[in-house]
Image (cartoon, rainbow, N blue to C red):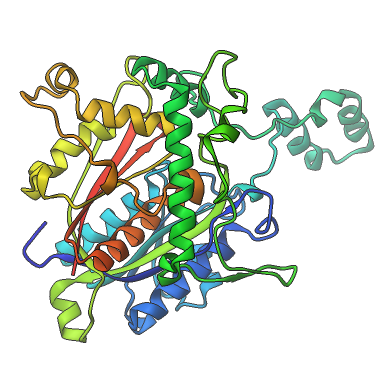
Amino acid sequence: MSRDRVVVVNGARTPFARARSVFNDMPASALGGIALREAVQRSQIDPEKIEEIYFGIVSAPAEGPNIGREALFDSGLPPSIPCTGINRYCASSLEATAAIAAKLQAGHISIGAAGGVESISSIQALFSKKATDYFSAIPRAKTLGQKLGMLSQFQLAYLAPHAPGIKEPTTGETMGQSADLMARKFQISREDQDRYAVDSHLKAAKAWERGFYNSHVVPVPTSKGEIVHRDTDIRGDSTYEKLAKLKPVFFKDGTITAGNASPLTDGASAVVLTTESKAQELGLEPLGALRGYATAAIDIKKEPLLIAPVYAIPQMLKKANVRWDEIDLFEIHEAFAGQVLATLKALASPEFAREKLNLKEPVGQVDPAKLNVNGGSLPLGHPFGATGTRMILGALHELRARKKKLCLISVCAAGGLSGVMLVEAY
């Protein structure tokens, strides 16, 4: 990062809700628009001065794949703002933030916004290629003979939809299957995963009780007249005994259950970014600054799908010139409890450091007292495109509350991808 650092002026997110529940009738553009509008309002920046928006989504709606633009229209912000959609799977909004930061540091813009959204509830079933070809050809039939010919070609199988799924095209494995295999490889027990999940739920429940999330979560009215004030999937009464009764989801002898995996979720988040000098010029007090960003990717045919952050973290620390012992907090995306625990094990492993990272020493041991202190994606939910900026906001607000300085944010993503960011509170 240059001396004129990129700062997060402010931001906001919607509550995160289990898919096909309270946000079932809200498209991604509506959720994204709410987060964008609130982020800009809280920044106290004239909307006309926003020069660029990058917005992340994984499952973009067919009718509006540039979700940044569609969210902008729903937000009521000036339609003259250029928008770009980003898809780096679960790291999408983190990458959107880094992309806006790069434009700011290059001097291409002076103020921008970034964020992301996911509406799993809006994903529609698909039809086969043969069915699509057939129905596309019907309007081209002009004569009665042609129309009767098309009718004779109809097959009942054309009406069978393909249910949406989350699979790696390269391996054919679902995300959950890959995570279960990752837990086996790193010898993460079912008990440890369940205990980690319970702990995360309890931390999230306590954070809501003490009002932490009120600092950046905006209530959302639904089409049914309800107002959703908080994340819907947190189980403050969760216990190890309850989770231990759940059956494995992906393999009969597996360790991942509905209790130690993040739920499919709807939600959005956004941040407003500028440079330190511009913030001073406008008399703004930012939440914090971006200190470093790094990405990495692995060969998913040879390595666990979600291990890439361990490769990116040493790069980010080197770029930011920060020692491991200087980090005050860690925000590690909880796609699955087993994936988090495997990541922690790899970071602390001398063998992994030597054999995989070409390092003489392990990256570092994460103090549990510094990890996901307000809960993570397991209880809060994981709207794929929105998780990165959710983590940025949570990290900066918690650093300020504790009067601490640095937080490392780590996000694993499909395709063997990752994004790692270091943020510093003001």
